[in-house]
Amino acid sequence: MGLFLFASLLEIGGGYLIWKVLRDHKGKIFGLVGALILFSYGIIMTLQPANFGKVYATYGGIFVVSSIVWGYWIDKKKPDRFEIIGSIIVLVGVAVMFYFPR
Image (cartoon, rainbow, N blue to C red; front, top):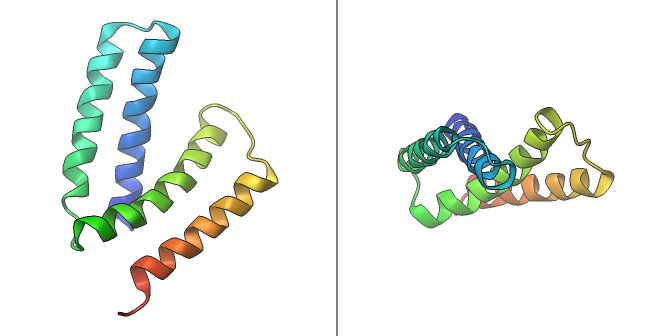
């Protein structure tokens, strides 16, 4: 779970910096740092012990929830009830995919 959370921080943070370059015309250094952070995200995801498809499906759910939290803390956008309900549904799906025995 720690690797998933760290990976989401890297992916969202790197994407955010590139967003700032393209949307807010920040300096090229923001873009370079964002690209390096996104590259680091790709490496972190390879450290997961499960197979690729299972890891990325599960990570997708963690990413959704992390994005909502990022929006709240960084962009100061309070999630509405549908974002919260959707996040709960996604987390239940993650639990089913990753933790239920086969």
